[in-house]
Length: 153
Image (cartoon, rainbow, N blue to C red; front, side, top):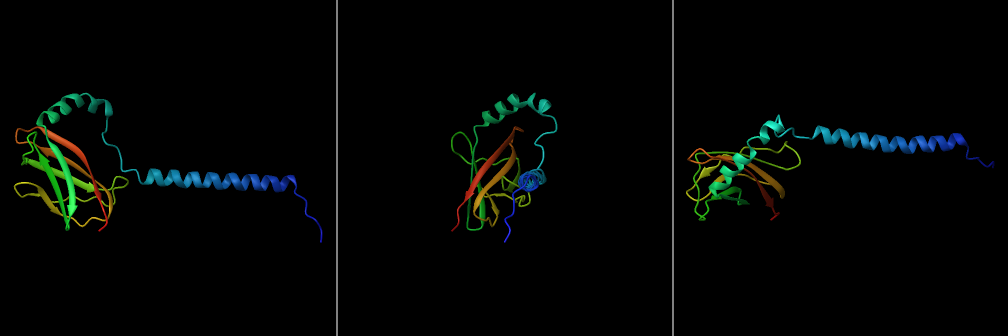
């Protein structure tokens, strides 16, 4: 039986192989990060920032509090005023989805029952986001991302 010698060629192959694996993994992770990015929030952040304070102040003047829960196959959205009374909005647009990707995004069809906005929704356990835009009866726009944690059971 002859002894095999570890040569410079072997060292080069180990070196190239190890860094090849590292580079391949980095490329795969970068590809997946870019492929699952849902997109930009605004086309021009400078233009959007010019009205930010104005919109925020108008929204905060409404004094609304928003909460969500999922129970019994229903998604329940609560919008209350500064006194804790239910708010009936002029318009409500919402998208329900995961924070990490858009493939599960749906637009729930909320109906106001006099106290809550209710929509049918069978949700898997985990964290969900409701990205909502509502218009007050006076025309003030209200935007909020509501975090909803659905617990198994």
